[in-house]
Picture 1 (tube, rainbow, N blue to C red):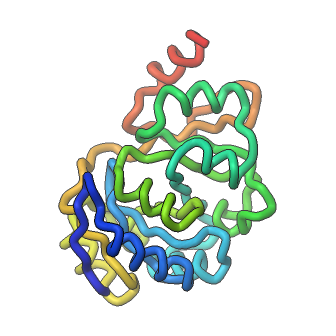
Picture 2 (spheres, rainbow, N blue to C red):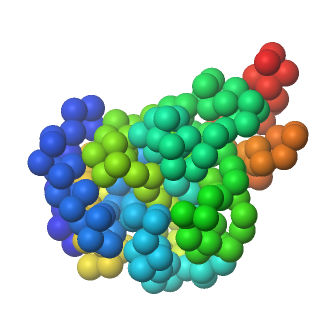
Length: 211
């Protein structure tokens, strides 16, 4: 594992370029987010997705969330958002809210655990957003840990746990940690809470009701 320090507020172009080159070649990059560290690969590459499962020792029937630079990138690569999804995205992105939306054919089924929906969010962390922007695509952001072990906000823990399984660790120091993103299914007419997290379900419902 190569470890590169990166400024959490003003990430250097050279560090981002190195990470992009690895990602576009099918590599794995550990990245900071507004909650914990995640593992980024190109979700449009089945081989790269398979490698993340292997690194984590994770079952291929488990879905992997995606992150984006902004809502425009989400729409451009996953398709139009419903009015419900737009309302929540406009209010909570960037932030710890993952929306389950319809998976387009361009996203391999493995990313979504074979399901027809895929989770995506715009994180409140400059490094992650700029990496998505520089690579020109959505990226995976599954937690940077071995399957069954707790996720971490500490790059030292990531390095010890994953070692040579990861090509590059973008070290922005400890991330905020705390609860993971809240996951809400917006593929139907009514929202459905899939996983409680950093944003309270009551707050999300109040946002929806306000319109």
